[in-house]
Image 1: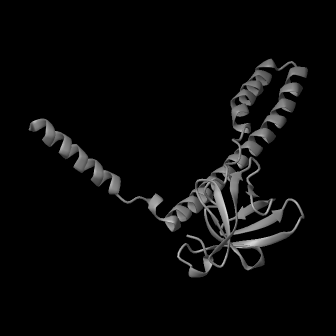
Image 2: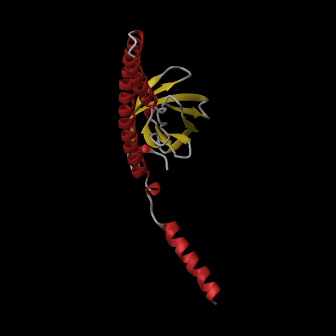
Image 3: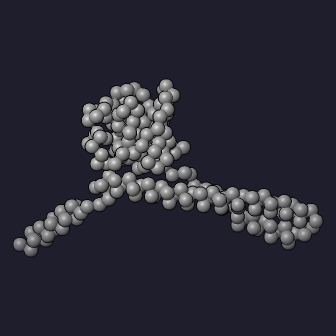
Length: 192
């Protein structure tokens, strides 16, 4: 009896925990979090780039000081410059730019009056009204763009994201157009 009660208690607790809502349950919340995470990441990257630039400039100048002091025979000053160069060296490396993995997730206006839905699982769908027009997959690229391969249309697009807007370039025919993010509950945005 005691063993059955423990199992029932564990199952009841697990179902309550599983039913707890999270940000993942709300597309708008996920988009907001991703957008603000990107803003913080961009600010940190700008800060890191500024530090790397300043450290690189200081190293170049200290290398000249080190060479001049060595020529003049002032080895203690040259060694001090060398030590400072070694301290600054790690600051010259900046991590790679973050990917746009979740920034594209959501509903967007699209070419020719259509809409597009990008899901977190990497799938994409174009809609003409509420009718599915073309499906595909999206991938974040190392350069920060998002690549979309449309299956039915046998075409691919490249997106350059900028917050709630993006510039789209069709990689086959070079057509370029701008798109805008739509609210998740926008009835004109098609999709599910």
